[in-house]
Image 1 (cartoon, rainbow, N blue to C red):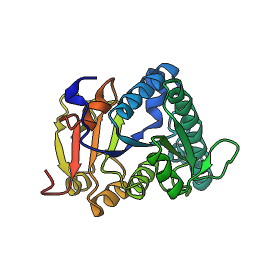
Image 2 (tube, rainbow, N blue to C red):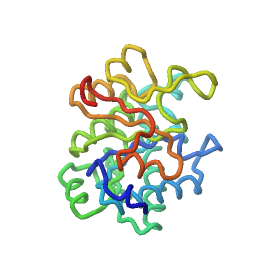
Image 3 (cartoon, rainbow, N blue to C red):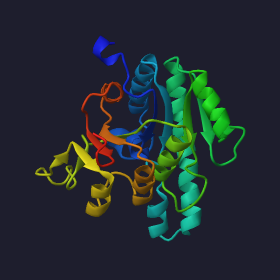
Length: 245
């Protein structure tokens, strides 16, 4: 690893991985090559000495809102989405262990045959022992997204930032996959994100970060970028409190 990247800016971080990122170009399901690439980046982050928690989404399998729009009861649909996050968490755990990274999956929904229940003190102990903790099952409650779960777990774990890996390079004023003229922001305040209705994280998650001055870095999940962000390079878009940069 490059010496310039060997000293982390953040000592403990929460990485949010969308369910869609697990699907790669397929758009649905799990692409093992993509998951293996994620695992290598996470292993590199661990080699820097960063304590890392991960929250995974489930949109590559089912999205609660989409299922609800198609007629499924919203509460039921959200629970189905939470179960999908556990599938992704187990896939990522398997890939990380192949990279030699000690990993624990904790889920907000009790399923002791597959994962530990989410217990904050136990998660903190895993960090102290050098393990990566994957948080699945969302918050365990319907009507809350995995973005909100990421903000909640980051605050509970005393993380210094949220890293949100995406398929685009940062936050834009419109969808860059649709509009080639879309403009990317290098930094934004929380209130700008909320006032403009920008698609960073949902408004509940952004408000939670704003209330606790927890920075969010939105960046492209392509190879090497996790380490670059953790090293403090200007990658993607930084969402922050006014006056914090």
